[in-house]
Length: 454
Ligand code: UGA
Image (cartoon, rainbow, N blue to C red; front, side, top):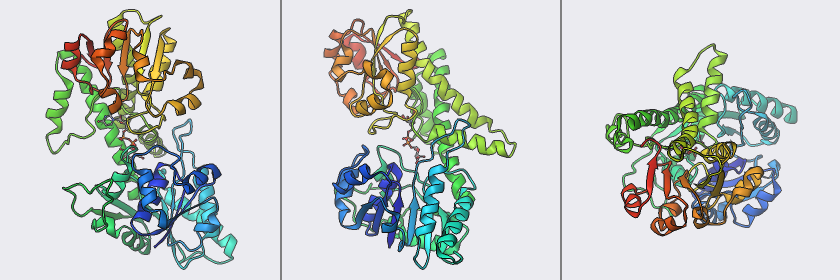
């Protein structure tokens, strides 16, 4: 099938490259000529494991362009995957989506095109996009768009850092439309993912236990709500275990064991019960805020979702408080921070806990030493006022510090020679913000090991 993808961020690029790998003819459109130039040269503008391998494997079916006219006119399916950043009131900013929908509406010219929203948009946006598309189509073509256009929602569940695996081997595919023909086209588009009949790439083999992938085919509003309900639930699962974690610290329980013992109940599930400094990234914060704000339009309060956000915010402050308890005085201290990206295997710094932690340290008169194996350059550009605290290597961070905080559990940090590096520290205190280090081994080497709770 002919597919066009508007926007080459994490979602757009992964979707485009995966569909091309599966054999569809894909055109990726982005208005940024620098990104398109990089992609034409086979390089990815974002850091995502296996993305460049996938781009190379799919290159025969992939075209990159800055022009809607190159990809949209004959497409069977157009994915819109543009950014929808948060506005100050919690609602997403839909300007990019509006202008993409207008351009798509002007350029579609095939017999029947399904326009799919991949961006996470407030519930009801499908109808809004439908109206924009139709107006743009009718203005350009001087004819009704009836029977020519369908609008669908196909929420994305990929995680940064494991985007390709999540796309080729998903837990489920959700498609929503009020138009049966659109649902039929999308079912055809995903056929080989649904029955897992494609040849798995050598660099990312199919998981052994994966069978057929379930399809949830529904109306527009339900598909849109599924995305929010899933993200808010994951966010609250993490906040829940962090809330229990605080109590675990007080009563002398081990939260990692509590999480394991709780999560092994198959009704609960052990994933997303990893305690620590809490969630960051571009999705959980934005989507929980949007959910609350949509509900408010219906005069409805969502106390559970609000609480998940409050607990998450509290976790970031708790990191510095935990150090304060130990060091007594934080002013004038040098504190190493390992990890800046909001999680390992990505260079994404959006809503990263490390940024708040570094700012709190500076505000309290400490001098942080910051490091990330991949996101440091991006950090320098995006947080220029904190750039002076960056170190060139993880080893540099240990030099002369009063304590180290592990904020992002990159494997690079877990594999350091901690015993050797201890000699460079002023005091060998480590605060493991992710319960990722080997406590017994560190204590044996002479470290004073602190977790978020005990
Ligand atoms: C999240 C969802 O997991 C995806 O399903 C969804 O498609 C995506 O948002 C989106 O809406 O686009 P992502 O934000 O990329 O994906 O990353 P996650 O792996 O979900 O991690 C989010 C944050 O939670 C990270 O800061 C991570 O460190 C933290 N986390 C995760 C925990 O603190 N504990 C856990 O047990 C798991």
